[in-house]
Amino acid sequence: MAAQSRSKAFCCVPKCSNSKQKQPYMSFHEFPTNDMQRQKWVHAIRRDEGPKFDIRRASTLVCSQHFTAADFIQGSCRLKPGVIPSRFQWNNFHVQPQKQSAFERSSARLGVDVRAPKTVDLQSNDSEVIVKDHDYAAYPPPGALDEALEYIAELEARLKKISLETPTVFSRFCVSDHTIRYYTRFPSQEVFQVFWESVCPSATNLMYWTKAQRMGQEASPTPSPARKIQLIDELFMYCCRVAAGLRERVIADIFGVSMATVSRTVITWANYLYFVLGSVPIWMSREQISSSMPEKYSSFSPNVRVILDCTEIFCESPTSLTLHSEIFSNYKSTTTFKGLLGVAPCGAVTFISRLYTGSISDKEITRRSGILSLLEPGDEVMADKGFTIGDMITNVGATLIIPPFKRDRQFSKTDCQKTQTIARLRILVERVIRRVKENHIFDSAVPLSLSGTIDQIWHNCCFMVNYQGPMFLEH
Image 1 (cartoon, helix red, strand yellow):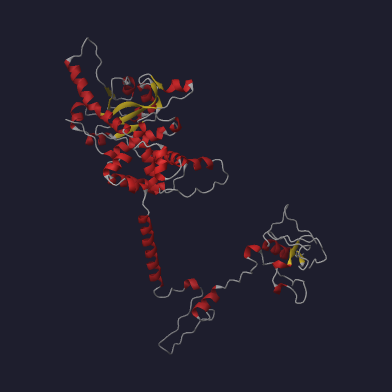
Image 2 (cartoon, one colour):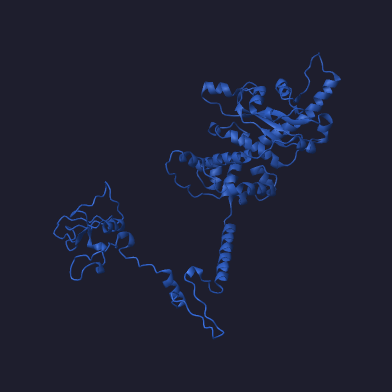
């Protein structure tokens, strides 16, 4: 039904601004009274009836621009019964052609009517094959799969060539084992490649830490943006900051990114490596300790399970007096973080504690670290004389081996020999700690901006000592 008499008629179709006042030559049509037909109109114009769209008689109209010429009764502006608007801005005012059925597509492709099965001539030797009903059941023409496989192989070769033609920052800087050791602390390119291949599969789904923070605040988080640098370069950027100790400004200039990107990438990889490496069990069983124990240890203390020592990392002094007093170390006379490290007699790192404030004692950090729960009755623990943890070690059935205390004016010959022997054996943990601190990020005081990530960096540096090869005591 047309509504041409209305001078203030407007079209209700989205993105259509036609009105009777602007386009007086157009006809405007009311929605059908039949419920089913009206719903078809509503669906066609992409509207939903509700508080924002209420169909009212003589006021909710659709202009003639959205109908085809075949929809009108010849010689009039009245619509034929049952027609539906089909021309809109989102389909460029074209009516989509009706999709052919599977039978029609098969008939057009094969040149036969597949709905009429062919008969088999029993009198002749040649029989006609009945054509399948659906085109997806038909076999592809000869050679089609060969062409597809050749095209796939060509695309793979092209992709491989593109990847080789795009050099990474890592490949430009790490050209030898010497540069690998300087920038990453890995002993060789082969060892670095083994480590990279072990973390690469899961690193492809890595999410920046800023994105992870926003996920808890957004109802529907948006996907992560495309990476500005390649994944292996992100790991190399982390190594440049931690192992080589380069400043963020220098790293930003090398990689051609902002300092914020460098900071975000370093924090993300520090947490990711902490998560991955922290799930690897490094505490060695008693059988593993015995099978790998050097002769020097087996002749003096065959049951030694671990060698303990604490170390401190300098950090910037906070402005808060309360926080300053907590992280101030009387031993170092400055603000520090303190961690406990356990090393097996073979030189492997088997225990890494979290970092604590510098004011904590060796005894308290041993109690909090959780290493006591790993010891078994009969184990021996070697430590420095400052570790007054004999009572805690005894409670778990283990034995503490430390240099003897001087009771008289001078040491006896036996005490001197024992002190020297323990010192020669305990030097192993000191050398491991030296390897940890060869990561140049510890050359200067850790900035307060990394206070939330330094614990993860400390753990990763201690763990990666095991990738630097065995450490043997000199004879």
